[in-house]
Length: 93
Image (cartoon, helix red, strand yellow):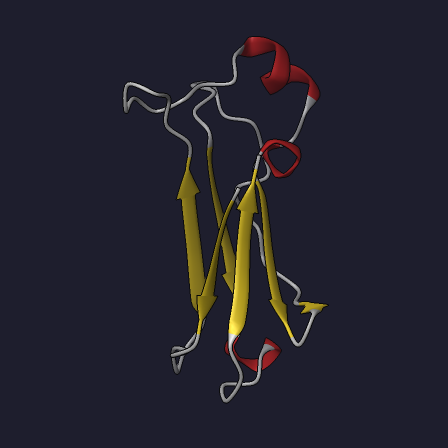
């Protein structure tokens, strides 16, 4: 799991990109079994909260891809958060 507190917020939409790497620094692949049975959001979970409330995300990455690489992308529309308060972004496997 990785987590960050974002205190300086963008004036526009926020895009979050996360990728898993193995101990050798190579992109981690989940393999064919997971690609057939799980969506990416079940393997890499991206959560954005403000004031302990989860914010709605736009996810275009929730489909399995042939390579099986573990990466995720989510967008938060600028209308979904208060620009005067910090965001907490959590990415977990």
